[in-house]
Picture 1 (cartoon, one colour):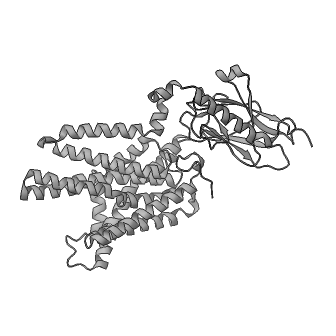
Picture 2 (tube, one colour):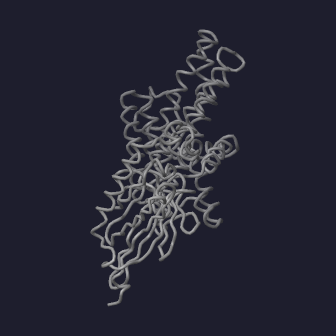
Picture 3 (tube, helix red, strand yellow):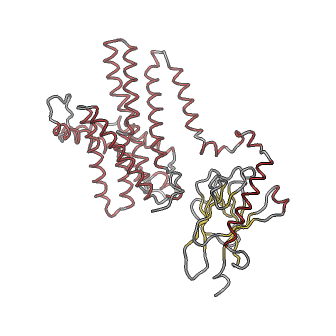
Length: 456
């Protein structure tokens, strides 16, 4: 057996600042069977001093053994979706990378630096890892007690990426902007409708952000916005009248004006064709377009724009549904009820009643339009992963989403209690699809909602 067959990998941390003056060189062995995580969190196997390495994330990078037998051990380094990235020999990691002897790993732009090397078990044993880590934690704690860094006294001096990625700065800034605009339009008759638009967009954005966080996968904002705009334009185009003619004219989907003289089975059937099948296909068209566009692009644009997995389908499906909800609410339901209430009680009463309808309709889209379209989007993404069963998967998803949509519309005309029950079931279907999509995701280890979990 050669020396390389018995080789052990280890990381040698390069000294920096006050550490360089002490002359201490930290060396950490890499396990052949377990992951080694590096970061500022005390749960990491290699803990870095937060007062020295402020740009290093709490759980920044992981070193994973590649299970092999009969040959020398190998390791991968993977970034854990850190704010400032992980670099190998000056190149930022996009995915995991196999390490070679002499590779230099840098955590962040100017963070902790390590050199990956081989050694023999006699020179440095794996059993010394806990002792070395414990020493480093002790030194870090003592150092933190003695010194106060500039960023500890002035937290705002932290990196901009930490603020934008971890402190929800962007949602907070958008909230402030919307609030200022809403105040600017309060009490003015000529801007009342604009005020309703602002409230609707903000609430719809908040509802979508909730779904986005549940999915846990980063999708470019311009892709999401592009799908939403495409859905908006489609609803203003001749496509909508064509769908109405087909599903409510040729097919038995004409929606009754009142449910008083219609049996529930007939009402459900009409809603299935006239609302479920029609609207779910309508909302899915921008999603299919994104998939087709992505197929004609090279990586990484294919992944950014197109659909490669169920999480992509859910994110784009709910974005299309968000736009559909805004158009349906602001162009149909709110103006109708506002005019009716204004005719009976005056303009002020009409505006108030309009707001009373707008808020629950937008927030309710999480258990309504977003739930159905997100659920169908899961199947669209699944059909990409399982292309041999594509049409079967799409058929099941389309019919399931249409049935949920029809139940919501039918029960809404009959009973508020039944409507609530259907809403809970619809949201449960969406949540279950998101959880399953996170498990199936090919990029699971890089998604911010699942990167610390284990693949089943």
